[in-house]
Structures are given as C-alpha cells and as structure tokens.
Amino acid sequence: MIQNPDYSFEQAAQARGLLRIAGVDEVGRGPLCGPVTAAAVVLDPARIPAGLNDSKKLSAKRRAELAAEIMQVADFCVAHASVAEIDALNILQASHLAMCRAVAGLRTPPDHVLVDGNRLPRDLGVSAEALVKGDARSVSISAASILAKEARDALMVDLAQQYPGYGWEKNAGYPTKDHLEALLNLGVTPVHRRSFKPVHNILCQGKSVSS
Image (cartoon, rainbow, N blue to C red; front, side, top):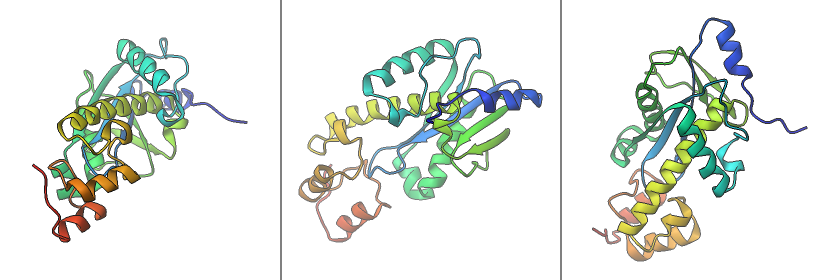
C-alpha cells in the first residue's frame, strides 16, 4: 500500500511541547550549474493543502498550483547557496547552508525542524530531526520540496535566457546529454560549478570559457 505524506511527525513533536514545526528540503544538489535551493515551511494544521507530496511525484502543473496554495496559507522562506559557496564548501555543506538560511528567514522562528535526509545542518540553532525520504512522509517537508523546486526551476529558466544553448529551461542544469554536449561545444559559463567533475575536466582540458 502506497502511503502519502501526513502530519504525524508534526503531531508527535507537538505532543512533546514543540508547537511550531517547520519542514525543510533542498533541491539542486545534482546539477552542474546554478545555486542549491532550500525552502522552509510552517503549515497551519487547519489549512493544509490537499495533495501535498514529494515534488518529484507531481506534474509541473500540479506542483505550481500547490506552490501558490502553500504560499497563501503557510509561513515560508526560500533561500539559496551560490555557485561560489558550493565550490568553496562542497555541495553537502552548501545545501545545509541554504537550509539554515531558509529556516532563519521564516517570519517566526520554529520550535522544531523536520529535515529531509539523513543528516542535520550543524548551524540550525533549533531542535531538529532528520527524516530519510521525508518529502514523501511529512506534509511540511513535501511543501518545502515543492517551493524549493518551483523557485529553482524558475531561476534556471532565467539563467537559460542569459546563457542560451545549454537547455537549462528543460534540464534545470542537470547533466543531461544536451547539457554535456553544450558544455563541450560552448564552454563553461560563470554559473557552472567548477568543483563538479564534468565541469572541472573540461576546464582542465583547456576548453574556452564563455563570458
């Protein structure tokens, strides 16, 4: 039986006296370019949008609809860690930095944070627990995954207009065949992650860098 995400993890925390629960998720660890993006969402238990789920399981149309609904009924913040920060820190630490920024940007600080994954950011500064596959288990994390993906996809569409030819409006910067071919033919842009192997290898081979 397929289980949809629910509010049980939030309720368990609330039973321990932790009343204001934020779900946190990130998107963009795998792409070769662009920032890593995180979102934090505190849902109103009386106004939880119907159909919340892991953003990867939703159609683009449904994801956009849910994102609009989440932003109407929840306290939320979307934050990024830049390409420079990814290259300086590594992708895991940069994704944790984006998560911390998202939590810090909420209107009211949460009492407890549910984080998608198996590791907690060190600098959250608040009670937290990691949930493996949390975006498919907790509606708060599902909501965060939806907002993070919508925000990052929109940002990559904007970057695709600045740097045409890489297909970012379709591949969001992931290493698809068309993206890798464009890297070889057009070179490395300022928004590519130089610490990532396919980009690093091209730079080491002396390929041209586009401005």
